[in-house]
Length: 126
Image (cartoon, rainbow, N blue to C red; front, side, top):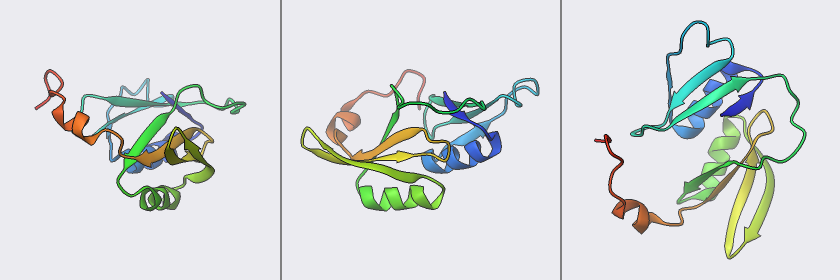
């Protein structure tokens, strides 16, 4: 679940950021929620419209891995993200970004490619 104050803008930003596609929801749900499906996955991201102000750092956030962190950060900035903080923790350098609603997410180097390719596919995934 990602909180946004504008669902159309939220869909546009997060669909572009995650290469996701919007899935239909009932007419009753659309004023409050939108659902995105990640590519080649059963994972869904739900966007929720809220006017509640953001007051503190998220306890949970997305980490987006890239083989070219700077290029990915520039791509995300072009669609509305902003750089919040550059960190170096436990031998890794990464960027903390904010979406247009102030929600934090990170962009970092691919950490475990051999593990990901060795993992068996999720049941039901083709």
